[in-house]
Structure formats: structure tokens, C-alpha cells
Length: 331
Image (cartoon, rainbow, N blue to C red; front, side):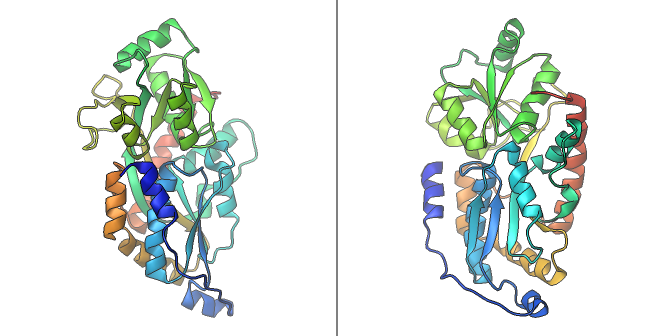
């Protein structure tokens, strides 16, 4: 079953009947959820955050007994718009956010360019990490480059002429590519899209010639012979692409990047709600259908509960913010 079929079957799966509830705030906390839960995904359908959200939403429905709806708010800006909308939602546990590692990068990019900061990472309470994959460098199957060195040599001869796609300025895919370009001493042409799935469409159509993306987004296209992968941004090779070298193996010691997807609530969400949500997530990621869906897409579950995920977010955010400062202003 290919990735599109997997996601289509998830999206059309039968849901619980809509439940409406109302009560006083204290009672609502004790009985949460009292109504539909919405998981905001700040990207179009088909990307890594969407892949994480849909199986989890169905599993959470069964755990919590209320509909859990995935709301793709693909407003662009690398996910900043959807992240900000989630940050402004009521802190009652009925609006959650499934987002990517760019969560920490985007406020820093706003500061870098002197723009108003749309949200802060501190606006959110980490609930659980769901997926965590190293990013892969993909090119069209028809591209002339068989290795990273082939691409670097060509880009050296043609600075700024090889276009690559991303999910938006300073989004997850943009930072990964700029890390590589800076380390290799090359200049590529950045073509921002409104999400990872449109960027992949751009790669398949030949509009762009390179893309950094998660294994789960790329695997089916690689298996179908439509794209070729050249390297892995992780510290180690991965089971779904065992023959793919890492950038570190190729001599790029400072090129390491992971595209993780995690669930967040608002910082002021009441503790009883967070406790129940954490318990539901612990069970949701064990559901066989969830595990099989992620494994079939090449992105196995990489679950972390709140304490471990919070520490992970802090460490990863510090590394990514340092990378943004090093890269500086790029288009």
C-alpha cells in the first residue's frame, strides 16, 4: 500500500459521532474532553506533520471517546501561521498542535529580520514526540547527480542556478539545505512552497532539482523510481535506506538535522487535562494500526513522553537556533 493510499484510508476512516458538551470550567477540566478536539497541522496534507497527526487522531478518538479532527492550516511561512493560531487558542485541551522541529527556528527568523514575532516556543507545553527522522537529500531520478559530490561540483560551477524546494523560509526543509550549502561552500536557489507535499510535487515535476525531506514523505517515490536520494542528515544510516551514506560519512561533520513531529498543547492547559492527554498518547502510539502505518511509510514511532520530550525540544531548539544565527539572512 503506497503512502497516498495510506493517508486516504486514514482520512476517510469512520469517526465517532459528534459529541457536544457544556459545563462549568472546573467540571470541564475533570471531564475533558467535553467536545471535539482539533489538532492543528500548520502544513498541507501529505507532509511529515500530517503523516504523524492522522493515525494519532484516530487512535486518540478511541482513547478519549470524542472526535479528534485534523485541521491543515497551510498558510505558508514555514508553518509559522498555523503555529501562531494554535498558540492563541483557548488553553482547555480542545485545540492541539502537531508540528515540526521548525517550531523553534521560526521565531528566531522573525527576530533576525526585525519582524514581529508570531509566537514563542514558551507558549506551548510539549505533550509527546511521535516521529523523529533524519532528513534525506532527494533529487529527480532524471538528474545527472549520482552522489553529493556530483551535486557540489555542479553547484560550484553554476552558483545560484540549481533550485531546491522547501516548506517555506526558515522552515524545516530550508534550514537543512542551507546547513548543507554553507558547509559545502555552495550557493543554491531557494524556492519556497507552502509545505513539504507541494515541495515534493515541485521536485517530481522538475520545477526544483533538490529537496530535503523526511523518509516517510520520500519512500514511495524512491521505491517507484521517480526520485533518487543522495545522503542522510542523521548521525547514522537508517533501516529504511541502509545503503544511503550520512553527510558525516561524506566529510560534512557539522551537517546534522532531524525532522521530528510532536504534539503540543498551550502552556496554560490545566494539569488534569495534560495528565489525561499524556496517558491517551502513551496508548495511542502503541495501537497496531498506528505502528503499521508509520512503519509502512518508512517513519517508525519515536515516542517520547512529556518530560523527555521537553528536554529534547530544549536541546534541539538550542542547536537549531545556533544554526540559524550561523546561516544568517538567506532568501
